[in-house]
Image (cartoon, rainbow, N blue to C red):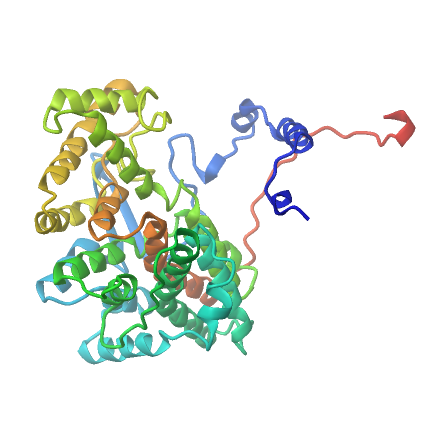
Length: 454
């Protein structure tokens, strides 16, 4: 049997797809008529309230004289401003991933003894079943690491004697194990792909229990396992900033929806991974990097404000890069004046660019950050302001760290698994009903016709 039968698109498939497309099109005026909140958002883009959460909070406005006006964005984890959390552990020269994971899961900042015990627990769980790398990860390596990650997570179900137990202690145990294993599953999956598809040498380094999550990522990824303190600290900050973002993002909502069916943890996390994989959710930082690589080739003087602004205008008018009409990394569904994650990130990014000798690239990013909102305001009708989001700088950071683009979104997942775990625990703790939204049928009743009458 020809292998291509699994991926060929035949003329018959094209014909049937067109029929399916026509059958699926709905008159856009009907959404307004029936007051449907498309994408669970109202006409102003505000999310429809679908639940309550203690875990995190996104604030992008304030009330002045009775009116809601845009404000600089703030992000809170369990009531703590993320800026304060990052400033706290960096000021005391600690890695923050484990500390903030503890906070999100247990609603308190750990003391020294609690943090040490929790870190040791994660290190103890950071080991895969015997022969898992050989039998699962090395077999049929995928070109997409998020698919590899999801497959590995689903396969771990088979190794768990209590896979379907949804009691809180068991689910917590499963979540902690997955938090510990996501770096291994992601990076080993990439190493297998890099070896079998690209012909590169195969490196499978074992994690070291004394290293932080960020340090272990660099240790198991790099052939020589070496990294600078600044590299590890910046990756750690990136993980903290991506760890959680309110209950309304797509993958966290997916976690609540699938958890509400009382299915197993592995199925829930695989569903969340599928959500995050989408370029509208977790893949944006790759587009930012690709956009800048093209920009650097097509702009002769990276410091010329007029030339850079003109290129940004071309992007919006679909005359440059991928002709999508977007400036990637600029704009957010909630934030308008600033994304606090990008603000926190920027000063650390500048330090790493100096260590790497990439000050000119950082200056170009800064100039685009300044000019893009101005260009967008002139070229587009906007109901709110725009600013750069966390994806704007994260791709640049990952590039400077030498991370392959195939791992950009898995790094996001390595961080966000903590938030997903907290949301799964919260959904189970509240013993809510199955989440089942309403869809209004708009088709007409039809009379069945026998075959010879059609």
